[in-house]
Image 1 (cartoon, rainbow, N blue to C red):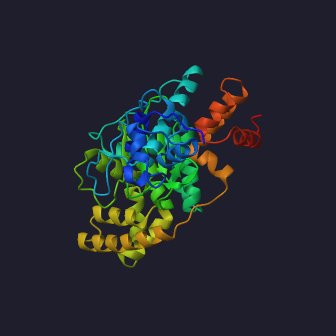
Image 2: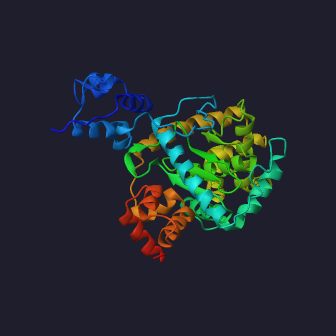
Image 3: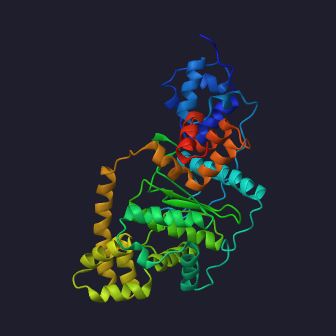
Length: 382
């Protein structure tokens, strides 16, 4: 069988990037250590298996040196809001993909004469929560009346559509591209933002609950209004975090989704326990019940002990519910969700106007050219 003349230095880079120990790759062949040392070479089939295992393009192994990846400048926070400087390979790949999409879309807009969006980095944590919340709410055209009759699924779709109309790309996915074997870990991150005055991007991890995704979307929008990049868990119970930005983003997100005056008005109408009121109001405001409970705590309507007892009970429920969640859905319907409908349509138009090669457009969207053609036909672009 033909030998693959791969670069052992690139092989070492790919393994270390993926965080895979050498012994794990010896399952492919006992001589793996010799391949990495440059003392022997794998077959083409073995090299292809390595590329798949390490999540790199097969052609990378033939480069003269390891590729220089664009630095990931976003700030990662864990569930406890503490700093973590190591990204999982899945998160690194998702951020890098979002950056590639952002770079292309920025150039696409600039060629069309686009101007800067005035809301990006318009505020700082020195401004009042209410001022930022009001500006964000007005910019995306959100009102309490719009929520009537919406399910949480429909409300998220509504928020996404209005956000994109304001000039922000919204990417929503629970895996790396279309790879169902590379699921994104909610315990690592719920979303991230990439501020840019021309083409700002927000990513929402759809492996999370629907109500949590709604909060994540608004939380990451606040990052844009502050001009602060971030990968966040934004735990709603941890307002005492040392991160002023994360705390501020939480507070603004709560004010946007559960305006204080409206909340107090609805709260006073209800009788019952914290659990009963939170559950009822979560359906009205389309947020997680813990957001309602947190709003009640901050408004001094419940004791801290009651709040954290309720919070700890919910954590057990969330943990069990996550185990039962399943993926699926129509790929052609999920394509513009994962890649942003605005971006997907822009790539289709650029492709069929002759400004972008079909293969490059398909690569940007992580699909095959034939799939891009089918989608474009469905959207009436062809």
